[in-house]
Image 1: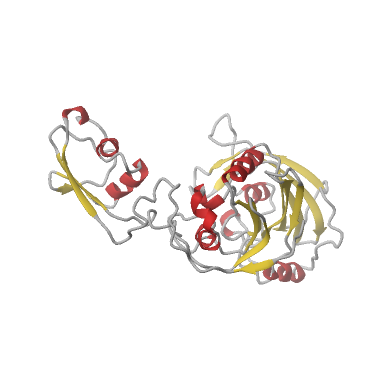
Image 2 (image 1 turned 60 degrees about the vertical axis):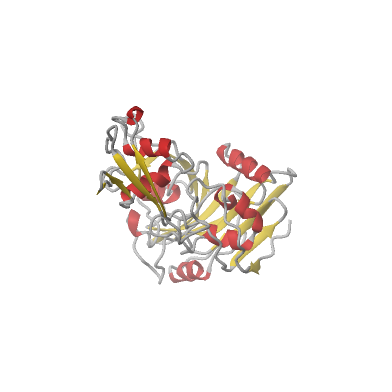
Length: 345
């Protein structure tokens, strides 16, 4: 399998994806339409968002709830901003169907993509640190999804433009993206079945003590004290999901450890949370207790290797991505280097 890197940049095309639930007005970003209703008796006592789904069923509940929160819905002449507000029979309701940031997010935007490999069914991308994968509050444009829509006309026909897994904004490295629906369904199933090998390189604080290879089995859920963080949780007492990571020591100093992490599961922030739990937060990972070092200002995590059976041909494929310049420089500044013979876990 050819792993040569290539830089591909494409001009935007005009198609807008239709497979996302909240893109109803994306192809007419400047348009707004008002509709008025008298609430029927059958809606008496219903939540406003549920009533709206019945009245304008061609739009998703998420989209309608966002319009409510934005003040685009009026009851008896007064704006109502709570989707859970209870309506009454005979209420005069006016809704302004206007574009929202989410509804305008799924549009092509040309950008340079480092395409490691591409065939009819999939592509492998080496994502740089700083690039958000999917549109979300605070990042409605300039994401990898937007770049994929500009790079590949097929992406508009697939949910999430073919994205089947994600990397955090400040994590660099390899992602596989589907280019056909058959490949997308198969990749999602294989990731769920843990049949896609995902290896990371991590630069962590403090010298690694104990066994050079350590299996961490610790469930992860939302941090009750900080909703922006995830945390190791006790599933008997808190909501969460099982999470397993295999860590292998590559090099050690008195202040830093260079590790390989192999995901057994794929939970949000999994490697970051597990290393913080072990007392080895990633360098520059401020959210989980890491501090900048050796000039590195983003979390020291790189998705170095992807290996799996091709979802259509069944052929074994294996891709690696070299360390980006900032991480390589940080390793050198910490007195560490990647071993020349990087043995497989």
